[in-house]
Length: 537
Ligand code: HEM
Ligand SMILES: [Cu+2]
Image 1 (spheres, helix red, strand yellow):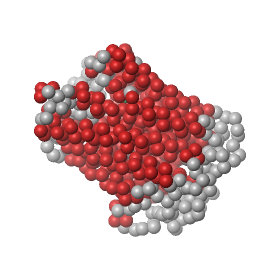
Image 2: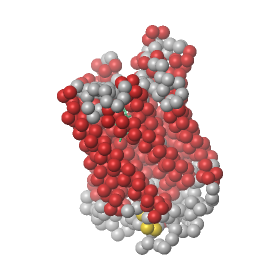
Image 3: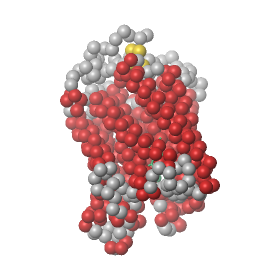
Image 4: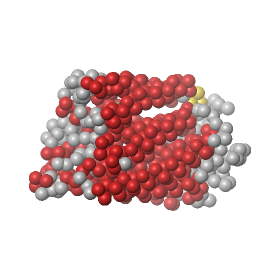
């Protein structure tokens, strides 16, 4: 069912010229601007990660000085967290697909959306400018823990300012999505007729709106402390460094769900399409997003078990953290139940979603090990934690994002990539990823501390395996991106609905016209995933 040419009337050729992109108010173009920017910064982060793994191939100093290593892991962390994984799915796919999913023509505040993009670029430039201004990038770790962050000569002020500006971008996106979801749903679409991706963005947006200001103020306090020495966090002038850790994690734990919830939304979106089956437990999945967003506010102390908090506080934070596992498992069970007895098409997007579930399970279960007070006292600040969070953020959210790119590729560009190459890239990514990070979990249990350029000889073998894994992973990444780039230019023209998807974006042409729908989209009877011929369990 391939058409001969792209539709004449589409958002790419609706307006011409570079200015029509840089000042666009179209949510689809803004989504693509984010895509290009975020992927570029991601690649910078990957290069830094790759260099660290080279340094760690053998014990002793190989390619960088200890101080440089500290700067490299900090910049890597700042880029991957603030420039890649927090904005990734909402800013790219949320912008592009939320209005399409709701059957409307744009987000509520298009100009604010553009502002949010440019704030993102400004923040990113600040983060990278530390490479040339001052005494180089911060060497504190992406967490900027006081009192070291107040005292180090490296350019903490600029990195922190970058995170502050990026926070504004995130808040504005969240605000925009909340209003869009409340006000712009197509006639007849209640909250419970929304696609689950929209639900996940809704839960995420509330976190962006309510939690991000806390970190914004905290980061300004670091700058105030550095510039004026007012004694907030530095004990030598009467401050309290533990206060910093509380304020920081009150945002940064909920931020983990800014990273995870949209990815879960994608899984809930993509699994029904490739099982050709109504999602199992629609409401349970939708409301569990809200539950995760809510519980996420009360667990931040699990990052601070070794900071000297009382046994009672540690116990309470530990128990509360376990509660997060409940709504998360609700989702996983419902995904698996949807696949069970579905007529499954194993296509590339589904493979990425299965990889998400596999990696995220390892990430989540190792998270429970960290959440257990007694275990964490041993695991804290070891490679177990590094393995754990890469499994969650990269193996989970990163893979979901790549899967979404393959899922919506034909909708965004109207073409299809080479599927054989995409399969090879996926295999390399999945295998390389696990080879890189699984050994870290073992190294951590053996006691290898994180954030060092060097290690004891007994850790050598597993570190070599991890570094070789990083080479396989990076070749998979290069192949995946190259394949998509070729597909963009030369791929076969795709039909408007190549996967037989059922949510509203599949009712319009590919690429969609500037105003999304030429005629009002028709809602499914009985909910957004009600496949007419689907087998009922
Ligand atoms: C090719 C891909 C990647 C490689 C090779 C890599 C490797 C590393 C290494 C070696 C460290 C430092 C460990 C230490 O000394 O403590 C690290 C830290 C970190 N990575 Fe990655 N990483 C990659 C991708 C990612 C992605 C995609 C994310 C996020 C989505 C991420 C987030 C982080 C964070 C937050 C840190 C902690 C930084 C800190 O300690 O302040 N990384 N990574
Ligand atoms: Cu946490």
